[in-house]
Image 1 (cartoon, rainbow, N blue to C red):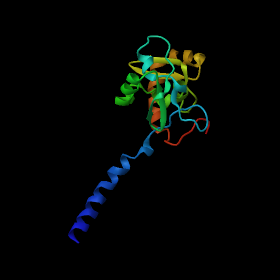
Image 2 (tube, helix red, strand yellow; image 1 turned 180 degrees about the vertical axis):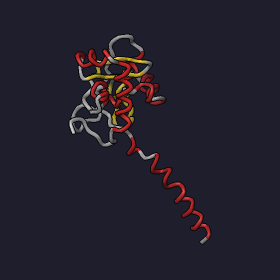
Image 3 (cartoon, helix red, strand yellow; image 1 turned 90 degrees about the horizontal axis):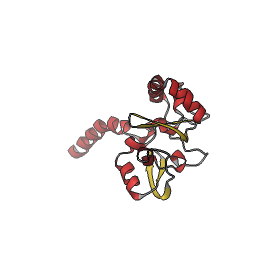
Image 4 (spheres, one colour; image 1 turned 120 degrees about the horizontal axis):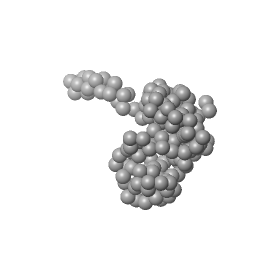
Length: 159
């Protein structure tokens, strides 16, 4: 009886901790099409930081799951780097458009309309939107991060 009481007390004390670690708090990742789960249109997010130019398309055989989406990589080394530290390579705002997020809503991010700022990857809807976003880049980033904090975990683009 004493063991059951002790176990019940222990379980009651840990229950709030379990709720706070729940994956339900993960933010939505833009994966393109309904029913799809490949992030960044299959581009290798590590390659944005290595090539100094255009990103490289990833391959399904080098895939890593993160926040409910699958990221593809050009090689096993890039997949391992991402798996070890996804926050360093995953796009900000779940790959949604950074300009839209600065205004408080979700829109698709184009992996070819990107900008690296302070070691972070930002995608925009297209290159024209990227040009607008760049005009007030720092305030758009700050507003985007404030808005991202309140975007519900179950939010969907267009919904």
